[in-house]
Length: 181
Image (cartoon, rainbow, N blue to C red; front, side):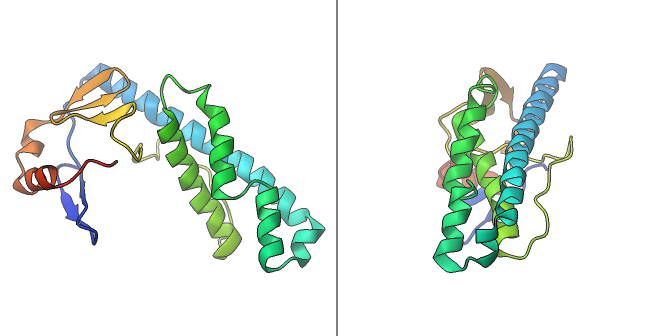
């Protein structure tokens, strides 16, 4: 998206930088994104199964308030339970996605589940292949790391195009902001 920077209400910056990729980098990134989509869809699939069991439960149809919340927890559809389930996938995909990335995927899924449970959403949707826009983590110390003039994905280092780093607003953000995601 090329070097745009947005200041949020908490004085936290969000920037997009252009990577200087070669063919091998692009292949690697495509594989990473595809694995992220697979993990997302596996978690979604689990949640859909659990949701379908929940809505067929006669107790759920009659339940209100805390009793309903307890049933949602029983069927593993709370944020904590979805993250816990996602850890089972971590072992299989550990060479590509670290636990923090998988946890962030689970949190995105939880938002979708929450929409259906509490906000009148109709469906929990799968991701179509090739539609993923970002891989996120909530720390800068794991397998995805911003290192000033490059990004590290596991042991692959991809340079950031110097032109995008020369943007004065991006320089300001990098100077004054702490890297979080």
